[in-house]
Amino acid sequence: MIFIAALIGILIGILINRGADNLPPPPRRSLLETPRCPYCDSPRAPLEQFGIVAFALRRDKCHQCGAPLRLRAPLVEIVTGALFAFLAARYSFNLYLVIICLFTAVLVLITVIDLEHKLILNVVVLPATLLALLASPIVLGGPDAALATWNWNRVVLSLLGLGVGYAMTLAIYFFGILFVRVINRNRKTKINTVAFGLGDVKLAGLLGALIGFPAIFYALIYAILLGGIGAVIALVLRSTQKGKYTAFTAIPYGPYLVLAGGAFLIFGNELLAWIIGP
Image (cartoon, rainbow, N blue to C red):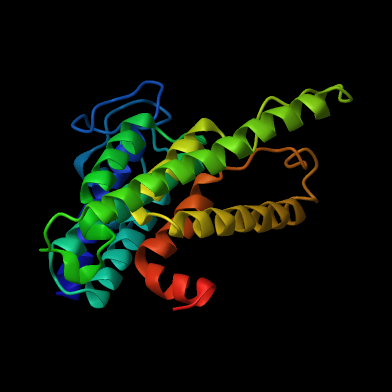
């Protein structure tokens, strides 16, 4: 079962790579359309669309222009396969496992796109939020609730999580705008970005709908802490590269939100018991 889950995860990773190649504008392409080389815009050859296979067979260059394929492709397939294998080892095979794997794939896709483009796409996050609300009786009920009857209490917790996720990050978003305006008064080079974008707000809403309240409250706190640590590490590592990074360089916060939210999605009961007690 674990091997099969890993294989399915690798196949889903191929779809994630296709989504990461086709969905971000410009131009936005259909998932059904063959991915294109970002250098010469020629359609990928069949083998070039399978990251692990392409690198294993040394077909890791564009057949048209010779540009190297992104290492991201096999990494996403490997990571997704490993995550699916871990989830299969942790849970029995039921509807709960299928739903958790589905949202794991969505979060991986969001992370990849945000890292590469600093974008969190409505076409991904909004349908996923609606699906999270619909799946809340199962997701918030845990592995044993996969065949349970509809539970309105879990729907309410999901809606509360959605609201808290939006409210907390909207507050940060507007504070960031105010902070930038104050800072720009005394700067010759103006700052045009804020720490949290509206995409991060929508992602926080998705995570809130997915893990519910109060988990989203703690997840966002940990995401902010992780983002701060990541920013400090990036500043230290790039301090020798003049002009590459400054204190006001924007960083993608989506991966930190996904990391914290994903941890509560999988280990929610254990984390809440550790934070607030059994």
